[in-house]
Length: 435
Image (cartoon, rainbow, N blue to C red; front, side, top):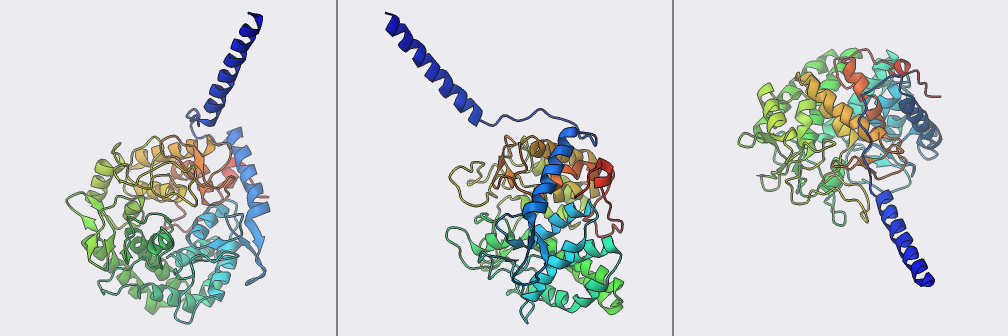
């Protein structure tokens, strides 16, 4: 009888431990907190993050520049659009040199026709993918910090060639460019080229990306700024006119009036993909959409709980997409089919501010802040329904923007605004230095 009781208690204990272990594995969302510049938790996280950048993210490039370069990836790969957002974070501390030093590495491998592969480092990624349209914007960001446009002048012709090469990705000559690339296992090269690695149901064939063409609008506008600053006055009007023309083409070919949303188009067959992706909000950030279009996008899609309004918005795919998913277990690589990513949230928030949706922008920024700070470490991307961090752990790249985004909106400050001439050291407002 005594032995029987012991066995029962052992069974209860095993059951309790099993339930407790399962509970510990389940992610529990943290309590919601308001942004506070005096937050001890925030300051501790930023110090940890900056230490990771110093130790793992500023690496000596021994193959091309022989300088220390910036990356958000511990495996020592240097990427294209990541660099833009990583340098925005560094601008909070008054650091500007990586805008130029990293780009020197990319310009060193530029082909005579202007092509620059989207990354370099120990891994053979993106060999057929042209550098995403962010170089001119990176140059403007760095030059405005220093007040010196000498570097921009030195690399002006190479920057022109890189941008001109983009407009060769237009075989049907409708004025819109497409994401390209060879097939990569189960992912299309076009989706990998877009940076939204596994959005293979959006980027079909030669995919005239909404995001791509909006980035190009901003690149043309940035080139006009560079040309003006370095005395290339004859080039200014041409870049501005091209940007205006491209905006009109985006609205003509990629806007769907019936559903009130933008979609990619497959140049190979002329068909619209009708896949609702976070990339389709890029016209808000780029100033391409009209106020009426933004109103429909916000009311019918962004705030729609059946599409993009999750507990931690904005998911990379709408919930209505057949291949939408949040799970990451057993999956290799990055998930852009539902998870929330910081750079896209960052662009959306600033775009909403520009169109007068200040309260909504601040709400998304605060949800993003809580999501990132609520995890034990900064992560690469997040579960849009629970806020759980996923991917690289710890991550010290573009996710870092989440910690400062509410502060930017509070001060109506936007370092991505091409009209913004004062690049602020926001770290001073938190009392945080980089070193």
